[in-house]
Length: 399
Ligand code: GLA
Image (cartoon, rainbow, N blue to C red; front, side, top):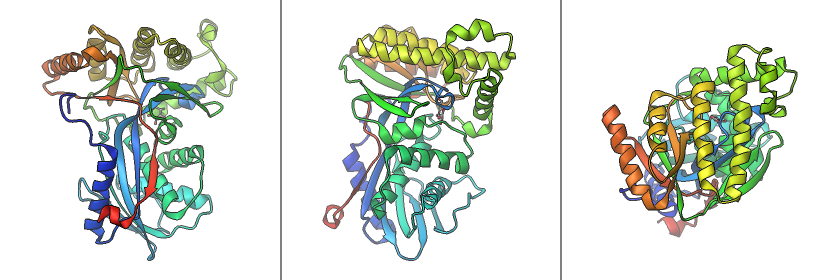
């Protein structure tokens, strides 16, 4: 979709549609609806698992789900986009060898079981407007929507941080990605019109206002499906941990860039590159928060550009398409900065763009990308959205 197309459907319309799809599929009304957004990380990349600071926001793209309890101990799943279904017993919570979205559901259920909660059965229908493999945390959104649905269905009280950790565990154990906490925290804890600042060492959360009408967040999906489970993500994470242990610190968070000249000879080339990225990225994130506070979006943009260079050259998690998007977008008048966002190896870039030129910037990026790669990237604007929510529905609302 380009920015000229109609915007993503409003959430309440989308929720009503999913409740309707549920009723048609299961021939009974849903009692609960939930929505979980995707996320874009503004800055603070590949530092969450190093105890660093991250600055993501939820986006105006969602996974929505409708559900109702069942008494036969069965979990029935239905994807309204693909028609795909899966059924299993609530006691069968092992990971299935097939790549199936039911693994995320099983993972979240296993997390609730570990909390000692009794699991009755339920039926669930989902749909989504978050691009799959776009680096916008569709998997964290799926975990979060299921966690919220279950909390609402069965009256389970948990804090958002507890839920985020439960979802992170599901991602580790059931998707095989040893991720940090950023995505699940952003998807569950974000606030409208704010960026979420998470200190991954202390797990303290604060909010940075982002509602300046002169600037917009533009997301450019390269269309290269990123695949973090393929092992490069885990390798970077391992290199960082090995570097921390070689340097005798618990995590790289304990160091800053003034150490870099001194540690160069202690670490091998791979560890040096990873450490250089992590230490400088932590500093850029703190500087970006200060620049947002001064409303200095040009400085934020400069930091975004530096972040991209560091991810490309030192951390080596970008790809040709993302480098092309970042390089071309950074040069356009009215763009403060642009960088890859999320885990990398494909997925999306994020740019801060002056509102007055958002359409022409989108058009230029689209045509430059199409001239180079023979296809259009998916481009859309988002405001920072609220985190995942669930609510009960009255029958008359959905009939
Ligand atoms: C993925 C992971 C996150 C984080 C980012 C990189 O999105 O799920 O925990 O590590 O990559 O910043």
